[in-house]
Length: 180
Image (cartoon, rainbow, N blue to C red; front, side):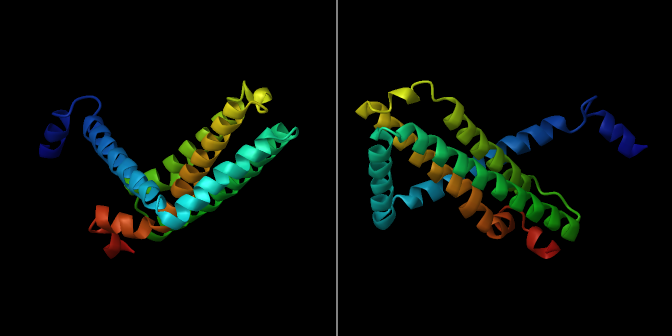
């Protein structure tokens, strides 16, 4: 009876307000972690590779077949993201079967990051209304910058953060390492 009375205090939606606040907090934490990994990327050897990639893509996009190169790279990256999605989903299911517990931050790492990356690349693919102007230097530079930025965000959210998942989850949930 005491439990039922206590639960009635939370109203019709129960603990939804509490859960939503926790999700907001976890999302902010995830974004902070993601930006710290992106910031770590911009150190001397990697920044040279990044700038070199932008320059090479710029030159490729300015070629007469630049539009085909662009779409080819985009389709290739969408395929890689799809494969990584299935790999991470399988990994997430394995973890759940092992522990039989769901962790909010774990779902954020393995599901939301994939959805955001996929959305970014789909927008990259679909939002190319001015792609036929790739011979224009400014347009080619914009698409090269955007493509490299999208690749970097995808790399961080699909490769780097999931590799660090165990450590991040143990930091977030002290009981996580006990259940493993």
